[in-house]
Length: 506
Image (cartoon, rainbow, N blue to C red; front, side):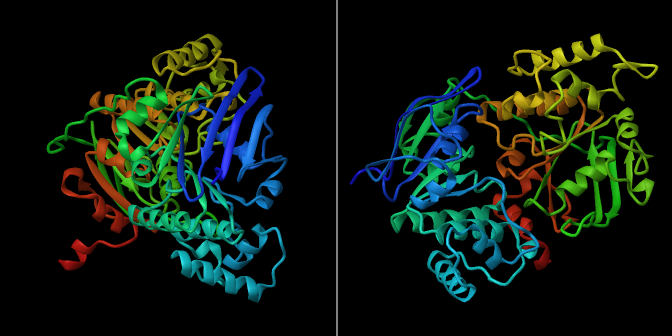
């Protein structure tokens, strides 16, 4: 049989960048095929070409052996191609059924659509209540909805972009079983992920891109994770080794006691009686499924939202819950939110301007209200040098950098302020193995220099590698922190779902 999808010599150029350089790729019927590569390798561009969002400058696309022209996502869907995007594309105020109806090309009466939704859900283990509103669904249920919407289109090729980034380990395992069933029924799956262990477990073959070119096609089950990482980046990826820290006798730096905050919008999460202590040189990991209060916690600690009681947040025993962002930064609390563009950095501003944005309260980048351009440029240049940020200069817009390079820049910007406390959220979300390893090394070095680090992450491998203790945030409540060496992945996963069987058995 011919490949379900075949790409021949795909070329795509942007001003100053050759994103795809003669790419050949073939996905067989019923195959789960991984597409791997570091940030800027050309994966996103290639997938957008397959889905009709972009058109290639050269090359040919074949579906089931027939050349096709993919001028739009409408054309792609007509040819049996569906895509599950990394970030959910759902209307929260609408029902499951209404969200499904909006995604389909043809208008189907609701009773018939509801019957088909239930039938597909039962067949693939993706059961959903059609009349439930999306804002009441868990993250795992929302991922199911995204997949069901695609399956109702009866696709021959399903593209999945980082589908497990917001799932608990148990939900990810359930998704893997579903994908195996879908593939067994004949649907091909093109699977994009930075989590190489799941690629090894799930995928039949993997095509690896580097610098816009195909460098290898391998069978992941026959390879080690380290081999895949080396093929992606062209060198060994060196993760830090962090020995368990003795916290007894260390003075607390950040203390949070009974912190409660109401939800700030109809679909937000209220924080309820959050309490923990963070010590000098400690990395405390906060685990949890997205949407359980992580954003609200980071905003409350950073000063974006003020606490009802000043004493509920303290640095070196000094109440700071009433201070704004600049006031807390002056006292040594720096924070890095999860959203790189639009929150951690302003895309339209230059790198130098973005360096100034968060560092001015702590570093001498202004004098008598006037910006010191040379000091700003020197600080931005130090970030670029120390953290190996690949950029043509300091005057380029932040949005022009790849995701990995922008992440290294904003992480470096906070670290070089030498904070007493660093609150960092999802520091390696969506970046490649080499960039993630660099960020990990920087966080470990910062902790070893004495900074107290609060690491909010959905990547449990990251937390188990770096954190001295782990606490789980669920529905705005924080389980008590536990020493990392005393817990396993299974228990953390249950707590992420709101269950602590050990506590229940006491």
